[in-house]
Amino acid sequence: MKKNINKKILRILVLFLAFTACNVDDDDPIVANSSTIAAEIQFERTGAIEYASGSDLQVNMSTATSTLSKVDYTVTQIGVDGNEITLIEGSVNINAGDTSAVVNIDVPFLETVTVTLSNPLGLYKTLGLGANSSLELSGRLAPSADSIEIAFTNSFESSSIWFGLSAFDSNGNWLTDFNQNSTGGPIRFQSIPLDGNTNLNGVLNSADILPNYIALNLFPQTSFSDPVGYTIYVTMPDGTSQEFSGTIPGSIYVDNSIVLVTVADDASNPGLKTYVFSAL
Image 1 (cartoon, rainbow, N blue to C red):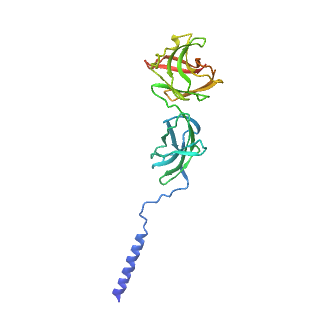
Image 2 (cartoon, rainbow, N blue to C red):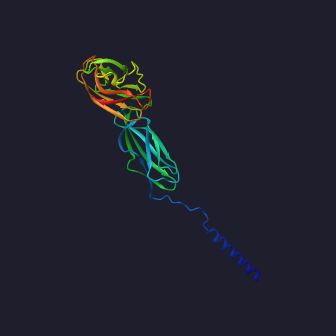
Image 3 (cartoon, rainbow, N blue to C red):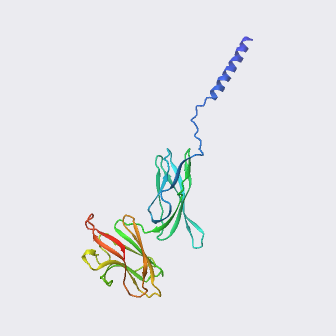
């Protein structure tokens, strides 16, 4: 009888120890996916912006996290039928400890797209979207390190207007051409090299031809019933841009100086030139 009692006591003791051992919490603590936003992700810029294709769009996080974070983006455009078209779907990662990353979008010249952030995702922590979660991009000329990039559009969407860089006398009469784009559609592009080796005659410095001057030139090769509206888009090597708009007469075979171009030797970069564009 005593042995049976001892055996019963032993069984109870073993079960008690097993039960208490199972209740010891030796697992790693579980980190809850908090409903509190740990960080917000948004674009650095906001609203509608002029955008050189391939430039950096910076995506910022309000606070760095200890793990990789991700946010999706879509690029959409309104089609000719008025319906929205999705052009690109992608995502951008923000590395642990970082507070920013960049997205590069290709936007055709003068076309408009909308880039929208969505689905911010982070490990263990809830991420949110900031106020600047959408951008409207209007495509502009991408900069070139070796040249100034220029484009010309006209109100008639005509391809019959010559576009160049020319010299004029003090009365506005044409003297000679330095650079041109003699072919193309309603949008004509032109590159002016920083070394001055333009595609017709090497460009001169403005100070050397005074009182004459250098200007962008529009030369209609057909007659128009009304004055021709134009817009000139200029992108410098550093990415800064300018726009010039106005009208020229619709007369055929007349040179029209439209934007003054002041050319000088670049003192900081021997062998190169500086170009300053200003309204006439």
